[in-house]
Picture 1 (cartoon, rainbow, N blue to C red):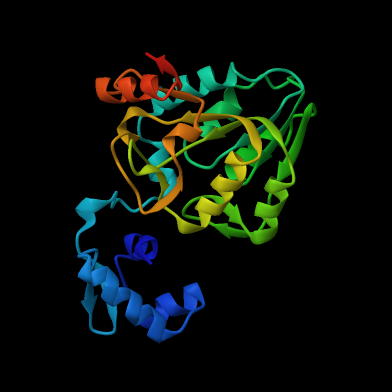
Picture 2: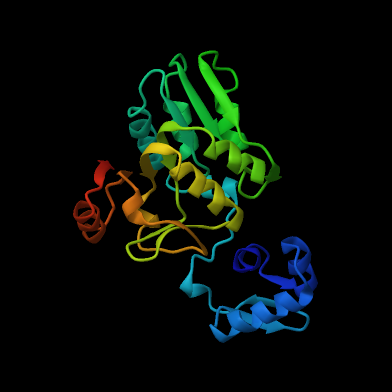
Length: 248
């Protein structure tokens, strides 16, 4: 519900109920609880976000996010691509950094790639040495994500040498979070099906939280980020035994 309200700012009870396939009564009850936590403000027949300072509140649109920190993302993508070896199987998460990983991978490199975004799929479409696996489902345009139960099951039934994941927020205590509730299941499936978990995220994501939790920071083996990462999170990574790769 919070994710929906962050995207549309204000919605009616009936709109929310239809999207989540629950009763109006359930929505009203949950809104009362969220209002008591000062997360939403009730309106006539609906609700709006009341205290967005507790979470990341920018509406997430792929095109807009892609334009942020382009140089850093490209450098992180290049570094991440260097981790991939011939004949490996990799998972590519959603977000605006993973396409840079795809672009920097050698086009002739033999590998298997599983992804669930339209943008990443198109990067590999013409590569003859790439075995492409796309988990299908309903296409969410704002996030460029395909989502379905069948898609999650497909991920769970495959195994990868490496998974490159993204996050909207990274917090020492509250873990890794994402903007969209439907992405959490996919990300959990990816983390549970890969040998090495590599978090690729620019420094602005650290110390922030979004609405939907999907993993603890200690589930990550490697972090690739930019040189603006705070000393605090450098120390946190070291204490957790996480390999920290800084691009400058």
